[in-house]
Length: 157
Ligand code: FES
Ligand code: FES
Image 1: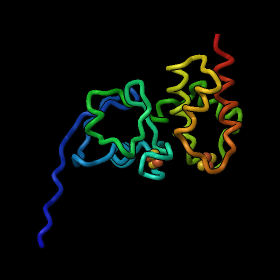
Image 2: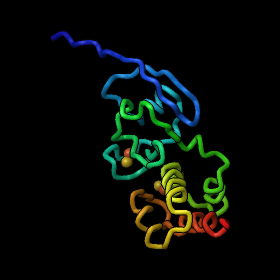
Image 3: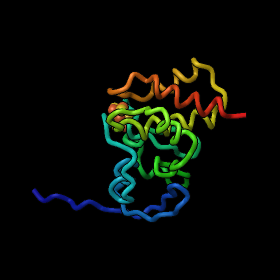
């Protein structure tokens, strides 16, 4: 049987403040396009079913699991990946508190914490717990992650 060749299309994507034109297949996930076409490998493939949060990115002001989002859905949006959060207070707080072990889940957690701080500058503990529940870490006990988050919250005026 003859297989049909994949038809690629060119789409614009804005990532971390830079405009890109990328060649994709319509069914490509945002995660694959970020990693394979733009070499932004901070977002990690984990479960690939939307459960673990390792692939989290921010699209406009909301956190999305990029493994279950089509790249085409992100046209005309502002995408932020972990590479775009370099040297931010939350990234530094994760380092200060050693809020990681193997580090595989860490980009996703930092993205989620950053989005949380944007939406709730002074969140209650219940809100923190609820937000962190969308990411899974199989190494840490989450305590250091909460401490990193609290450091940023408490240093805010
Ligand atoms: S890899 Fe996307 S949620 Fe787990
Ligand atoms: S630090 Fe290893 S999975 Fe979270």
